[in-house]
Image (cartoon, rainbow, N blue to C red):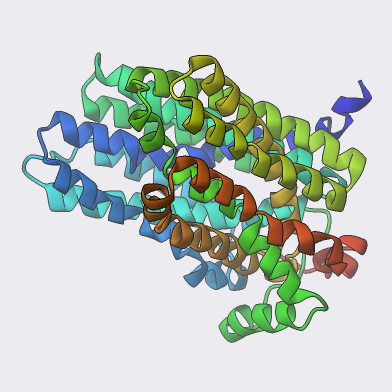
Length: 418
């Protein structure tokens, strides 16, 4: 039972519903919305244009300083903003269902953009709250539970919503999805306050400039940034082209959906939970190295699949190991991001680091198709393995992994609670 010790804390337990609330809005403006528009007879070009509504997720660092600087007048700085975002999401998601795509497509796009903005805002504050709340020894386990809740929400608002749409009108489906946000509101209300709360920045300028100055004046700041940029980049590049690769190699959409979505979901949750256990036992540096190597080597199985051709057993093994190792790596990587944040500026620094990682992956993924087309799929997947090497080489040199995190070294108390 000692393996379960990292999960016994109330701080860790509350991450499950908060993760669910964070994950729920994503399909609402993504795959579920695309399915709704397709049933309404919209062209693929029009449906594809709706991908632009997800842009707030990539630029959430722009307004993150506001969430560090200001606080709403209830529940404290972090939980107050979370509750406000969740309450407005509840209404906005339910309201989307009442807009007819056939007559008010522009209005629906605006509503979807508003939901994405509110969801990105919730992400900013939930990441900051998790960083402020969890002590170093609970970061990986808390992240693992958060990821589990997040993944369950993706399934509920994705596949679950599609199943319901065969039986209910879309406005009823969206009303139910909006109502599920109430779970997040209740969880936020009952969530514990951080034991130590850093002072808010004195001005908006301090909330914007000071976090950058503080970060880049640390010893090893550029090494840390390089690790953040490259630790997950191989997975981002590979996953971007995974479904086209599988279709090209003869797998049906049903086979891909059942294995990638359902087996992948379970393997990711198991990996994240196991990662929470092993990070607590091994420490962050060793976990980052081992899990980073494993998540990179998982792509070797896709290279083997590219050589052998269609093989359901090899597909199951490849998807299972890929998602299992990615779950392990995610637990360690998010714990690293949390350790790099000063608690005075958690919202901005975490949002900036996570956005930088995402943009790097998308930038390199954009050229992945050309590599696969010219050099072949086996070479493409082996190159994604090589992309992990820079981060693995730099991790042992990170001074942040040998000492207390900046936000914990000398926490400051303030009248505003989290």
